[in-house]
Length: 575
Image: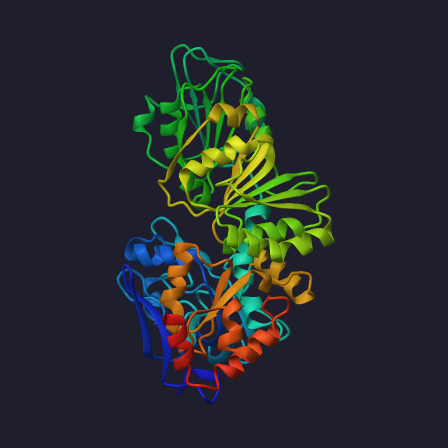
């Protein structure tokens, strides 16, 4: 008996696909078998899929990428073995996590999806942990850089809420506009993420105090959010202000296992101790540095990769009270009225999104400095963003930091360039209560030398997130479908599979001024910037709006380039 309840009649036996088959090894597979749909499975025909800098990380790391490893829990191994698109470890994978498509087949046990639905893919399977991360579409599950992608309903339903990871979308917006919701949602998540300004209730707390320091301010914190356990490492010369601390004493930091504690409160100023303590933070953990009016003895080597990927957080106070340190933590990483914003790496694909979001958000008395080192890309960004800034009454300046020195005092710095030295530079640019959004995807273990004395004295705060959640996707999708946000403003190049390697090279070299969109139905189309369309696909060029991508341009591209064999376009882009 067939396992397919409903299916489109024209599904081919093979398809074009991009596959990563090893470190730095890309294959354009022109005859990848289209998988057979199992009882709980869904086949989606991909309309468009964006390329992300994260794809380059997967290409280089391959099996060592934390999202390419095996799923540890959440689904039985037998269930995972039934899913042909599950490809952990050395198995070839199809990248691409910025995808939109239409459901063309469902198995007879599928209950929440129907043939014909147009869907946006939410990619981050946090309910399926790997050894140090979680499963994800486009990593250890095949992604959207193929003509057809198979998903399993047992994977793509959020267990806690019952929500779908395939979000229904209307037919109004272009495929590119919908596919670009995913990276825009990652930007949205970086600002909307709810910070924790209290001890984790039921969590694990570590309290460390040096000689001459007083453990103070914990009573209020403990009463408001009692942890399940408290461990102390108190020097002989340390005092406890509020009497006995209900805790289990540890002989020293070296006997404590890594990534154990949800909260670490340190009464002291020794940099080497702080560096040990950060390694004891569990994911989502908070470290509170209480200096008691003294200075930390040197810059601290901070794991900025964990801020981005593990969402560890740093706070502190120059007072003697731990409660004051937690009091410095904001509710979220959002902009505020009157902010003076600097976006470092603004002229790249994601940087431009931060700039456009800042301009478009409706904050009053906002100034935005778009900072980069490439004049041509800055000019392109200014062409896109300046009219919007004028319309929204936002003061926008573009700054080449290689030739112009920035003055300190920014209340918000968004960092898009993964250079550790720039984290310290961002802090130096920040003023009182400055927020530094570490959006650049530093690998876990990447250290930056940070002046924590400045950080603590000014009440600064590092935020950082990785990926997005369903709510972030929905928020951006709502703005796109209502017309309040045109995500196509960030699109700079289009391609088929033939131009994928060139596109990856452009992303790594940072020569693209915006996002690159892949159209699987045009496998032979080479990498083409919007500026090149006039020579290569004139009908699409004619449908641009002031140089910006539109639905009409997309339709013209699909009709024009799709109506030819594509070889001429491929030769032009490949040189």
